[in-house]
Length: 77
Image (cartoon, rainbow, N blue to C red):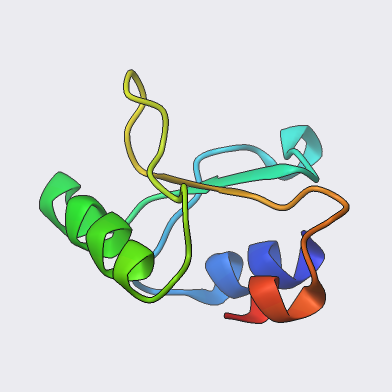
């Protein structure tokens, strides 16, 4: 989770709205600058073999679920 949060925190493109002290270690949520780009991200990431990155239907954005079975290489991708 730290690897992904560190990337998001330094990004000028992606943002996360969860305060650092409230962040989940299992579900990392983030957004691009627009809902259209979020949808494109979800579509292109699925085409690249990364599944279920689309955020919750009521909240939008993206959600990376990185439970114990997620290898480091998956987070790096």
